[in-house]
Image (cartoon, rainbow, N blue to C red; front, side, top):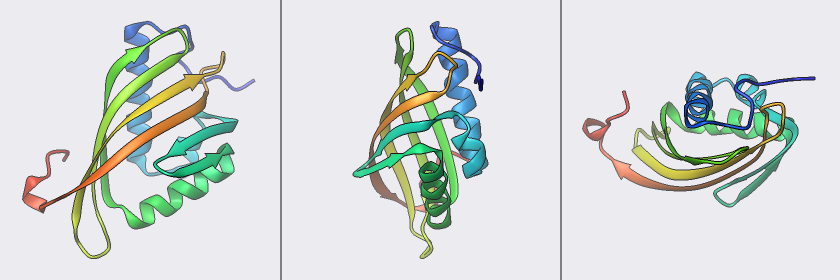
Length: 137
């Protein structure tokens, strides 16, 4: 059976570790690596998209990072319970035309007993920024 440490029930320290591991994986921009933190049938809501399972996660992320260039993410602990974690995040990227953006959002995560994320619900808003306004370097 696949396990992804740390396992629930989470403490504040283990929730923060889980968040840092997720941040590191997403910043790798490796769709396969990122998808391995999720259950085979993981359920996502990402903005207005609904994504189900690792294969769709990998496809979504591959497309995302083809269009969000120089992507850099920072996740911050918000709260946790036994098997759930809430995070605040922001990330910066530029599009193919060179326009920079900062995306702000919140995610609610639910984990199975093996530490794999089975649900991820993300609310995200983008703001135009100038390159000199970047703060996640």
